[in-house]
Length: 144
Length: 332
Image (tube, rainbow over all chains, first blue to last red; front, side, top):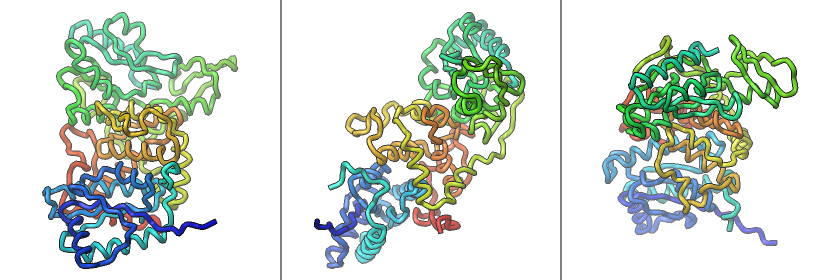
């Protein structure tokens, strides 16, 4: 039997105004980051509902990263401040339930930081790959 | 064991009803068994004299019932609030969930409620009646001739052992003496879990949450869960009205529910009281409360009307989500 090579699947929620443009810049500059990172564009990082994160894990993501504008630079003035509080609470809760804390992350990436975007994704993909498959929040019905 | 007696409450309810201050009374009545006390709305003095009950099993938090009942009756509705209920009362007022003008709140002292699961552990099944007798409970069972005497302190519900406050934060009238905010050890169990390794914690919660049958009792009883339309009632969500199909669905429901009440939960402990599977759900809420206290400063939801919940607020100096784990590095 052929063993399928394990490749981590990473979902990146990127805010439309900063991080999505940052990812675009990374592409324009020919910076490489893993193709396993699937980017989902959201209007603001605070659009990310905790359900999105759990849903991503359910559907087979091994890591979820939320990227937004730097605090103070939010297009909507204060969205990422709310993200910061919410995600701090949520990640702490996931850790409390015994889900590996390295699988979730929040990073602030501006539209000018293509290099930071690529570096963050490379580093995060490596971290998640070293953890292996997401077993603690998986749904076997969603396994491909 | 309760300092205030049933007769005093009945008298108060009847007098307020007959003098027209209120037109309905929200109180407790006996359910199937002595320990199975059900909330009820009384409209006449006769009903109250006949059915009104007050004992160690009157745990139900009436604040949530006001969302449906306040304004439904002509004039005001009388509600009896234990100290912990008054916090939920304030929290619901903050969220504009009922009309304060339609409610006449009477604060009553509480000495802690009994947990029937603990009684059953000591006495066994087949309980036919339970009577308060000084500081103990007289429990008669089908199988024993003489009733067993149980010390009320030994069967006190977990939330009452770690009671956070005997002080009423909202009332129109107070019966008996008001208490004080207590120094409780309510976060000890959370801290014990935090000190475990992630693997141990995962095993602990897997064991607890796998018992969940998704009866939604925790949600239905929770005074913070008052949304007209709940996300878990969405037919398109694939998790509506059904038992969890696997470990993911069990965890998802409880993570999301705890998150939705985070910062608004007053730690009244209703979720754990009503859970038919005895899952310690209050630990999830307490984890959020403990975190919020540590990250953003001490906050007690419902301590006064109009407080801004920490998760709908921010400062520019908040800690980063990644820094959450670096404090004292509990997992190292």
